[in-house]
Image 1 (spheres, rainbow, N blue to C red):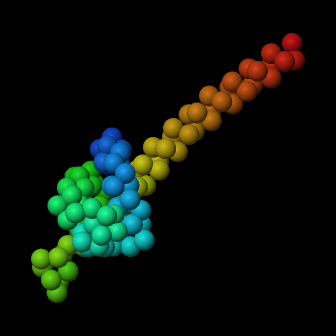
Image 2 (cartoon, helix red, strand yellow):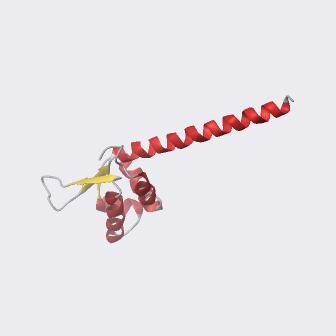
Image 3 (cartoon, one colour):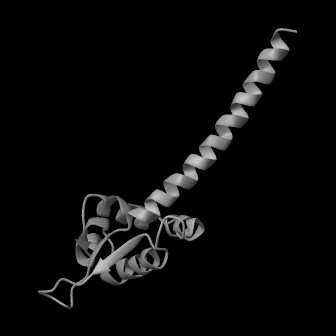
Length: 113
């Protein structure tokens, strides 16, 4: 999945939940196992599993199985989804900066008349 193919709407939907945002913050520090994330977030293992499934489906996180323990899963951030969100936010900011500059120019012209 590249930043061009990241579905920003799905990412936004997934990040609408405070626990999922906390998971993203925790994974920003480095990869973690589901149990570690559940403990850090103060949630049950089944609840964390649901949150991680939503983040996986949205392309926000990825998981790997360590070679020494096929039962374990280690989760990490998919940086392309974060970069796609940043690009979308930058576009939004650029639009509003342009709108505010136009409004400022309009107000300044009105003062000098």
